[in-house]
Amino acid sequence: MTPTTLISLVLDWVTISNFAMYIINATKVFNSGKFLFPREFGVDPTYTFIARNQIEGQGNASCIGLAFRKEIKNLEMKLDWSQMRSDEQIKYNKYKLSSYNQINAECNYNFKGSLDGLHLRFLYVYRKYPADDLPQSAQFNQASFNQFNLVANFNFSAALQPKEVIKHH
Image 1 (spheres, rainbow, N blue to C red):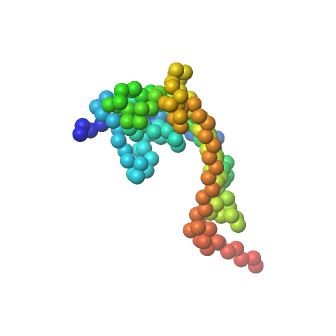
Image 2 (spheres, helix red, strand yellow):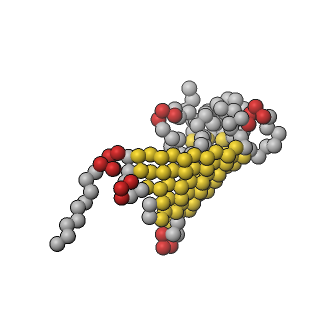
Image 3 (cartoon, rainbow, N blue to C red):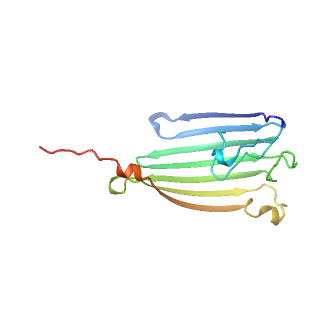
């Protein structure tokens, strides 16, 4: 098996007065083979990784992205745009994915006080393939879709940690 050559770059900056973070990223998988990364290992270790987007299984492909991040107290907001350009040849495209554009909007909220340990995540994903001639069978669960996720996680160890007691004199 031939090793795959991959390069991933990121440029990020925070605005003056810490208003927000902006990120530009890019990943290129060369035509030396497919980038294989088992899902059991977690998320792709590339700077262009965003939820519901994958470069795993691609060869001779490129991905560019723009991101915006803003935090206000317990709320974190993210907006990501990604454009994947993939090779249509099966020897470079494990999942037969066509090139696409994807937008993710995400809000995360960490509760404090009596609900300490509760974390809510809202994720909206929009994916669109630039080609309008894609057959319906190739679009099912892969192309031109909207997806909404609302996830609630509860971290018991955070909720059970002793709280700082303030003594009044």
